[in-house]
Image (cartoon, rainbow, N blue to C red; front, side, top):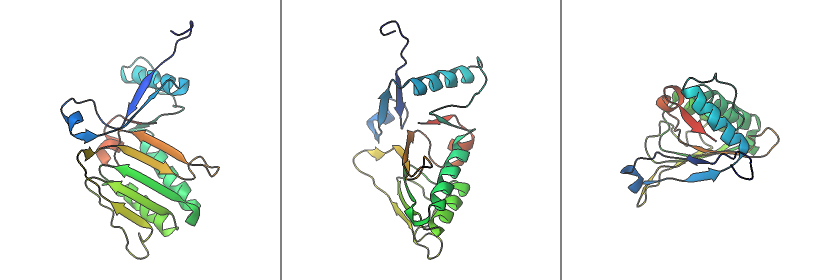
Amino acid sequence: REDGVLRRYAHIGTGNYNSSTAQLYEDLGLMTCDPQIGSDLSQLFNNLTGFSREDPYRRLVVAPRSLRPRFLDLIAREASCGSSGRITMKMNSLVDFEMVEALYAASQAGVQIDLVIRGICCLLPGVPGVSDNIRVRSILGRYLEHSRIYVFANGNGRGRPVYFIGSADMMPRNLDRRVEVMV
């Protein structure tokens, strides 16, 4: 309570809270008291414990229900913008077939796509007519790159970018079999 008002604070991180791997991985986090994010997180925890039904979230995108469709929609929105579309993704792995196919389609529509992927990447960049607008980089420094950051240049539908951070990679286990949160 602050000045008689309940205020929720939340940490949105791109990794886990394992004390062993925290010494090896590079991650980032956002500390926020945004009321919508706080409310959404309370709703998520209540849903996970069975104390409420799952209502739509305002600021969160949560797997396994809404993350895959939301990201596919954002990729398709960039594709509809043609050469003014731009996607930047930083993640550990890109192995989900549906996401790879959506990125190929966006590239064919003229979208410029930059991927920074630490581990496995099942997308083949630079294939003429398929993925010539996709660049893939892999970086590995002193600490294992572990953060997940996604940027869609026209993501809000009005020509303004939308940024996401969270814990999900583009892998079937993250999209379909786990609770993963993106903000």
